[in-house]
Length: 258
Image (cartoon, rainbow, N blue to C red; front, side, top):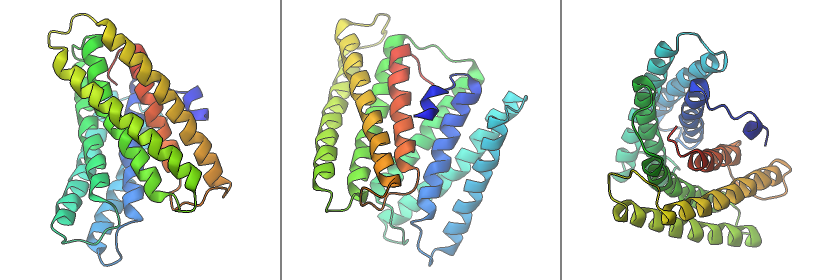
């Protein structure tokens, strides 16, 4: 869990998190584009390289933060255009990719969320109460967590009976948490100037479950790396989604949106 030991919460860490998410997604998409779709493959590879170059600047802590945010926005916007195009073509059966449409939609949602975060960075953080932040983070990320578990199951070989059972149980748990988050979003109306006890307790539940999910993903990642679990999972996928689980519980603990 080395990445959690050095989890940066400064502007460079936030940029790294969001650009790296789309960068990872574009590498996963690359492996699932048919060799018949050469133009799509070239466009996606260009977007991947562009985001990779920006990640190098972020890691190096390029001093012009304003320009860095703009570059991050533009590169993720380019990738967003590619993946929304791919999703639309997939829905019309006009393109050959192995990626499920729901996974393309998952990638689109994260790219769009990153654009909101980049705007927040440019505006100096925006005005969000801890209650608003908690509800936003839980409704957005719980859906992503439930998606992740579905994709883990998709990649697991059918012979992994116990692992598949664990993943199915966890999927149902996060789907229920998502329904509860959606209910609280409409029950707790704006202005949310206080954090109600029911929301505080819900946050505690999510934090506990997200920590368990992060731990499970990293343990499964080790099994995959040791070739002890049969799977077609892309390299680095489990670390990617463990990082997002970590992001969720940290934001809920801090009552912020990053």
